[in-house]
Image 1 (cartoon, rainbow, N blue to C red):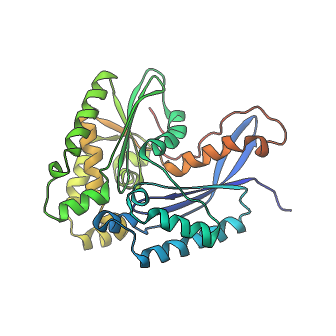
Image 2: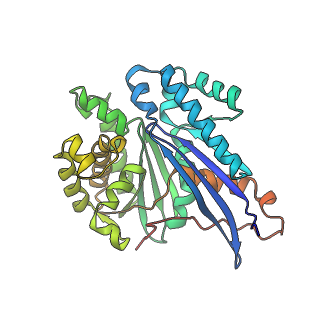
Image 3: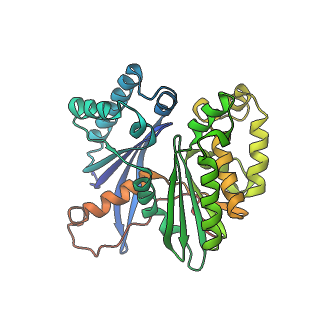
Length: 326
C-alpha cells in the first residue's frame, strides 16, 4: 500500500555547486517536520568562469540546462507539489545570467529567482532561528563561492546583517593570481570592521557556520563525533594541515572531492578570520543551508494546501544534523 506524502523541492544554484533537496511534509503528535527524501549535488562551478570572465560560457550554460532538466524529471518522479529555485552570487554577477535564466524558462518551464545576499541570508534565517538559545548572542557566518553573508542574533532575534562579495572561489582565484586579500578594493578590511564592530556591540559569544566547506571541515574535526561545537584552535590546526597538502594529496589522502579540495582552505580562512575578529572560540556547524530556508518558505507559502485537516500553523522542526547548541 502506497503511503501518500506531500513533497516540496528546493534548488539552490550556487557559485560552486547546484543542490536540489526534496523533502516530505510529516505531521505526527501535533508537530510538523520536513523530512529529506532526496538530495542531489553537482559541482557545476558557475563562479569559476563568471568571476574570471564576467559571464557563463556557452558550454557550461548547456550543461546547466541539462542538469536542471534532470532535476525537473526527478521532481516529476517524486510528484513534488511545489518547488522553488534560487540562484546566488555567480548568476547575479554574470552579464548573461538573465539570458541563461530566460533560456531555462523557455526550454524547461522552470523559473529561476536570482536573489541578492540579503534575501539569501533571510531564507537561511528561517531555519537558523530554531537552533538558538535564549540569552546567547551569535555571529552567523555563511561562506559561498562568490559571497559571504553575516548575521548577528541577539536573544534569538536577528539584529544586524551584511553581505560581502568575497567567497571561496573569488578568493582562490585572487590568491592564484598572486594578489593579496587586501587588494580586493578594501572589501576584506570593510568586512573585518563590520564583524568587529557588531560583535562588540551585541556581545557575541559564539559563531554559527553554514555552507558546504565549513560542513566538510567540521566533519574532519574531533568535535564531529560527539556533535559538539568546533573550536577555533581545532579549525586552525586543520586548515594548516590541509594547506600543507598538494591538490593530489587533498583528493587521495584527505579524500576530498576535487571541487572541494581547491576551495576549502580559502573558505576556511574566511570562517576562521571572522571568528578571530569577533573574539569567539567555538562554532556550531549545523547541516543546513539556503535549500533548507527555501523549503521552509514553501511550507509557509502553501500551508493551507498542505494542511487539509486544519491543524494549527506551527512551523516544522528542521531536519538538521549537528544541530547542537550546547
